[in-house]
Length: 147
Image (cartoon, rainbow, N blue to C red; front, side):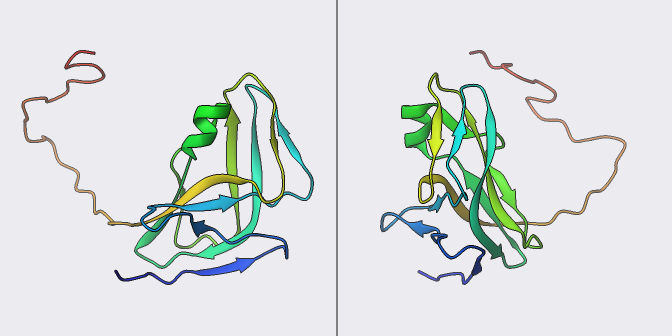
């Protein structure tokens, strides 16, 4: 399997670099690197610093996704899932967590808070037209095939 090289910079010495937690994992676990403990109250959201910055190659994006264990056991997920890190962004990776649970969620340095999936990006050229081709579905929207 080919491996894509991505440059990563630690912005704080204690930052933990993302890593795959199993041999065939699609996503790398991302670790929190706050300067102090962050408490996310039920129904609230917070940006969690990671202490890292990435240089994603042109033609790729990094998708930030929730960790299923946090969602199941704590009700914690991402506000914008998946979040996108574009190839031209060089700032600190911040993870926007939301607490849908009933208890406060405490984030400490080194906690696993998200997953990072590297994916190819296909740029598109939009062509304005007066009509679109018809399909069986056409403009059938939300729930048009039933529940």
